[in-house]
Amino acid sequence: MNEQLENLNRLPLRDDLRGLTPYGAPQLDVPILLNVNENTHGLPEHVRRAIMAEIESVVGGLNRYPDREFTRLRQSLATYLGHGLTADNIWAGNGSNEVLQQILQAFGGPGRTVMSFPPTYSMYPLLASGTGTTYVTGTRAADFSLSADSAAEQIRAQAPNLVFLCTPNNPTGTGMELDVIEAAYEAGEASNAVVVVDEAYAEFSHADNPSALQLLPGRERLIVSRTMSKAFALAGARIGYFAAAPQVSDALRLVRLPYHLSAITQATAVAALTHADSLLSNVEDIKSQRDRIVAELTGLGLKPAPSDSNFVLFGGLENPRAVWEGLLEAGVLVRDVGIDGHLRVTAGTEAETTAFLDRLRELLTA
Ligand SMILES: *Cc1c(COP(=O)(O)O)cnc(C)c1O
Figure 1 (cartoon, protein in one colour):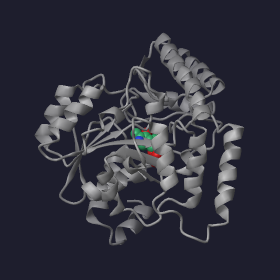
Figure 2 (tube, protein in one colour):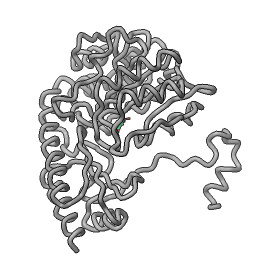
Figure 3 (cartoon, helix red, strand yellow):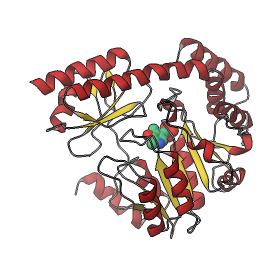
Figure 4 (tube, protein in one colour):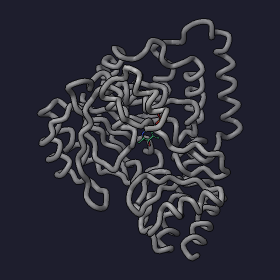
């Protein structure tokens, strides 16, 4: 046992946290970072200026606590999402990870279960253990898809308190048809399950992959979660949110820390949302790089999963570790998500994507 672990184990740590490892995607200092699905296009100059101006307008009031109800932000998010949503339908937190944690604090906890379908977002089991919620897993087909019938059957069998459905799914990039979400919701009726649809990558979807937002009317156990970390290029600002029935937000008010969204966070998000159009035009560029990666990897004889996100999971690698290292030597960091024969790459700028593809071609033909 190493010294760090020995030191940790002397502490009166909760039994259910013993032996766990924290989230830890490597943060390395290399020129081309394509490993954690960040937006590789920085904020346009006019959006930076708008954010600075909005922050400047709140700095004078930083001696006071911020608006606990983040009313302006909720209004801006409702306007951005459309679908007839109002501020009452919106909740936000410091990244959608915090929002998901608050959902588990309110609806999960000891004696309760949250179900998901791996391979999926690696934070779900960690958020579950942090809140004392039991994580139960279902299964997908070999091509990572999940049909409505299969989802419904598995949910009925497990009777979970919560279901997390990630679409487009991380790390596979694949989208999910709305009928799967409808079936999951109906199957969850028996256990009164809260169904969370994590749409962190929704803005990168192809036009024919609709959002679960349209399923919200009449479904009070349904939550559609989003983030400003990806499409809005604001991973460093930590802003995530969801749309749901107003009573879902009332439940989260019971567990959130008071004033959890700083005035600076609120100002940043409101300013960025004012410029949603220009931020989303970068999204179009990223989508075309994503489609280019899928096409070129196919040409190289690899097996990329179809992607509705800003990244591509690809299989067919004999030695993913050697490819990961070879890319890193050339200053390109991608992600080993622990699926046999696979790696995951985030779509970069055109130049970054070219550097990744050129180096990969070299490695495969060496
Ligand atoms: C990146 C990501 C998030 C976003 O997390 P933030 O806390 O908002 O940065 C949420 N869900 C999935 C599946 C993700 O990949």
